[in-house]
Structures are given as C-alpha cells and as structure tokens.
Length: 414
Image 1 (tube, one colour):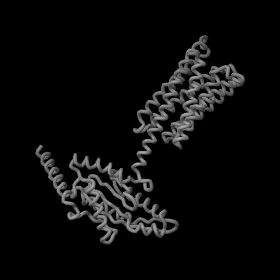
Image 2 (tube, helix red, strand yellow):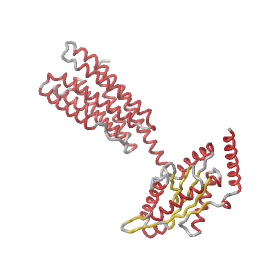
Image 3 (tube, one colour):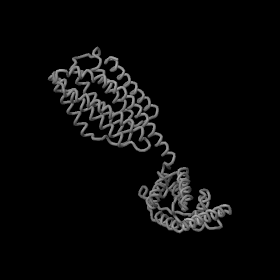
Image 4 (cartoon, one colour):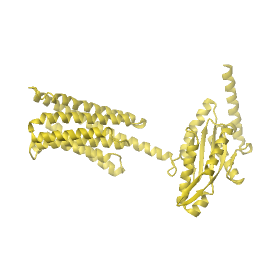
C-alpha cells in the first residue's frame, strides 16, 4: 500500500470517528470530552492531509508543512483534554505541553524564514508528539478507576506504543546530516502511518468504551442515591443490609438499625414552603452522615423518614448512637431566608440480638418502635420491645442464638 493511500485511509478514519463522536454527543447529550475528541481528530486529519497528499496543496509547500505541524500538536493537546474531561481530571503536565507547543511554533516560524530547516522542524515535531502521547497514556493509566480499568489500560498501552513510534521517528530525524537520511526517513513513514491507523482505532474504541463505562457507573450511582439528600435510597440500603446479614451469619455478628422520623416537618412545609422543607432534609442528612461511623450506612426511606444501618452493634450500643443522633437533630438550627428553623425526631431501634437476622423483621420492629415514640410524646428514642416481635421472628432469633452459642462452644473446645 503506497503512502498516499495510507494517508487517505487515516484521514477517512479521523473524519469517521469525529462524526461518530459528534453524533453520540448529540444523541446522548453532554458526553464528557466528545467535542474535544472530535476536534482532535479533525485537526490531526487536516494536518496529515496537508503534507500527505501533494495534489491537494493549494499554496507553497513550506506553509503547508508549518501549518500541518502546528495542527498536529494542537490535535494531540485536544485529545488529552478529551480524556481528561471524560475521566473528570485536569490535564496532566499542562504547562509542559504548552511549552512544547510554543517551542514548535517558534521552530515552525524559523522554518518559514529558512526552508532548509525542514529536518529540524520534523525532529522537534516528532519529539513533541512523542512526549504528548506519552503524557496522554500516563493520564489515562493513572486516572482509570476500577470500573474502567481494563479499557483504560488497553488504551494507555496503545498510545504508549504510538508514542514510541514518534520517538523512533525523532531518532531517525536526528540523523538528518547523514548521507542516507532521506531513504531512512522514507522507510519510517509507512510504519508511522500503519501505527496511526491502529492507534486511531484503539483510541476511538477506548474513548467510547470509557464513555459507556462512566455512563453505566453514573446510572448505577443514580439508582442507589436519593437525589435530594445524596444518601442511599431504600433499594440500595437493602442491598447493603443483605451483605451485612450474610457476613453476620458467617461470623456470628450482630447488627442494628435505627429508624428516624422527623417531627413537624409537615408544618414546616405548610408554613414556609417545600423548599424550606428540602433544606431541612438536606441538613438532617448531613448531620446523620457526620455523626455515624464510616462503615455505617445512612438512607432516606422517603418523605421525612431516614434509616441508619449499624453493623457490629448491640442493642445497647445502638440506643447510645440513636440518642446521640436525636440530640444532634434537636440542636440543629437551619437558617432559611433570615428565619431559624428547628426540627425534632422520633427514633426506633431494633437489633438482631433480639429479633434475628431477618431484614424485613428488623425494619418492621424499628418502625413499630419509632411510631410508639411518636405516640408517647415524640422527640425520643425507643427500642423494640419483646411484645413487638412476632412469634415467628422470635423463634428465628432463638434458633440463631442457639446456633451462635453452639459455634462459640465448638470454637472454645477446639
């Protein structure tokens, strides 16, 4: 395959992937970095077209060469910005890249004044692009999290190989004073063009795969988080609870849950508006997250109800935590449009030590205790009482207690 055909194939791929990214951004909406990626491909495609197809040159060759060099490094910078925005990170070594581009522009200006400096421009261009693609590869490798790790590492590997190709071209270009320089440089060009074809495909695949992975993670996050407060929602809390219950069964552990209902939030909504009620809910969510331990889970169950899951916590310890939460909410003052808004909370506590490790049973018991706290005067903490526990749940709790005691004795004998 001759050089012109390889150049045209690369240009068509650049245009195709740019169009795909633009359409994808238009359909999906707000795709991170898609516009930067499309712009990078267009710049790189035009750069290659200016110097790779002689019959398309409209002016003196030296101007086409200088413009091509500048477009190539600008395209690489835009590609870096595309991945940096997609991975939600700042561009790596931004100042160093700007310095390299400024140096290339100076050399391009010198080349326009002294056309015999073409080999020097080629050398500086190859070094600049080699360093730029190495930086892009490092940024992708560094900032690809677990959810997108494999795709990110593959893309980083492809760009690292492409960077080595440019550095190889730079080594060849550094021999421009030797007699066989022209022939040697001509042999390297097809290798670069083939590497560009492969790298362009890998880069586009990597960018689209990273976009899909990030979108999937974002959708999963949105499915688990309450939009107003940023806490877990009911579904996500149950998933966490199921894992904790399985762990407790393996390790003979215990867990407790605290159900919380705000007292008087309806009055706040009716007198000051729902926007004020939303501010109160957000403030309470912040207090709950700041008060509990790092491995505890806090969820908004809906309306003005919250739930706190406390792994490895006995009933007595859970009561202490619940009382601390009640005090924090009691002392909390929300300022809204110049007014001070206060709220109170009724809390119900249930523990697997009493009711067993059945999630629905724990939820029902803590809910029952919470409503009993509201009936008995509000702004207080009550634990689930034995008469609140259904006979089936009580039997299950006794069985679990007997199994735990048997395992403890067996461990002591061993």
